[in-house]
Length: 241
Image 1 (cartoon, rainbow, N blue to C red):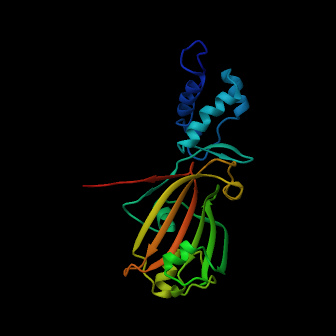
Image 2 (image 1 turned 90 degrees about the vertical axis):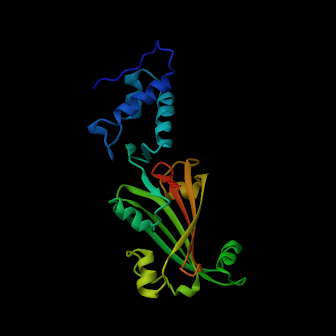
Image 3 (image 1 turned 60 degrees about the vertical axis):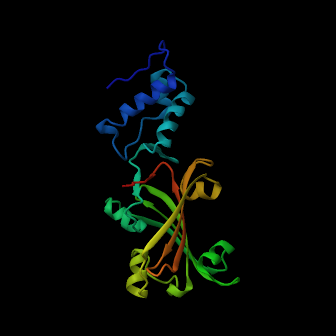
């Protein structure tokens, strides 16, 4: 299908380019996981500057319809959707969507955490807790970096088989049942560390989800922070009166 831009139109070029991109990503040959044509070639064929085209692409990246991969190009994607009215662990969320999760990196250490975390757990100053860092994503690349702190009462050591879902390990191996999650959602920009881990550009948007997890007696179990690529994750709120 031949696409073109009307240079005599009063509609700004980047808006015309954005509309064309929306049509392109709906085509069968450009469905989820497929690469867009090369930016330089596309801009040349449309008779617009690369900056104008990139402005249009950035809009779709922000909406989660496209994702940029370093050394690969721009890929059509379908964002992961997480609904807050039906809370599940990350592994359970992804399993229900048919997404095969890959653990790219996992690290453990015992340390004295920040005062905010000690206060959440109700622990004395100087207490050590187990910290876990996990870089996770799909076969195509990572899209979330998790930092978790666990209350020592659980019994986790860091030697467990974390190919199993975390909350299955807690319940089946340590008789700790996860019941309640409270969350805070904020937006931030990727610093160098996050940009490198999540294969993003410095300053690109990240969704930061802070999760406080409790057992049935409302005792704190886990303090978790997740940093998600904003172009691969959508958080949906659903309310009913």
